Amino acid sequence: MSRIALLFAMLFSMPMITACSASEQVPETPVVKQQLLGSPVYIQIFKEERKLELYAKMGNEFRLVNTFPICNYSGGLGPKRREGDFKSPEGFYSVDARHLKPDSKYYRAINIGFPNDYDRSQGYSGAYLMIHGECKSIGCYAMTNDYMDEIYRYVEAAFAYGQSRVNISIYPFRMTEQNLQRHRSSTYASFWRQLKPGYDYFVKNHQPPMMGVANGQYVLGKPLMASGQATTLFASTTEPAAVKTNPFSASQPLTVVK
Image (cartoon, rainbow, N blue to C red; front, side, top):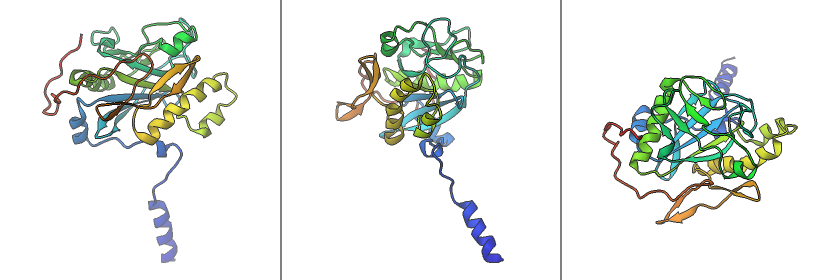
């Protein structure tokens, strides 16, 4: 009987690995999170799970700082196509410091840069699509104010440290083959297939994918080499700025970007 009990104990103590958990990182410790303030950042959004993941660069890879529940978004799954359809965008976006809105009427906001090159190639319309606070959404990704504070703080610090653009990948769900098969009858299935290479690249390399647009479709490019290091660009991006000394390693106050 004791052997049976021991066997059950061993089975239940083994880590459970699923298709979902295999692609998700565990958030860093509070001490490491503070040290990462001012490092380059990257954002992933998963609509179906209602999650926003914030990553920061540590060494040669991007590590998960935190996962935030999305308070609200509108329009269900699928990309935004026209102004007034109340949908929240999907795809690959890139923002600079001018996209920060510290005085937004929705607390604080980051304009995600819709429409991007892909959206324009499809004739999609709309503007002022944000990640913001106040938990209210008509086409935006709304967070609680406390969560928006943390997201904004890391993005603002990254810009102040020298990151020229922050990439934001927005997916309907985790782009596993299982999930794509589950949604294979959707009218958006062919569009979602275009997003999968970017998703897979980050899962494998822990680096934001370099996405471009060719013949009206998203395409995954090869990392560009600059000063011996790989850099990544999304559609409508520019080269990253020169590296500076991190002014946030000693918990210095952040400079407000206006």
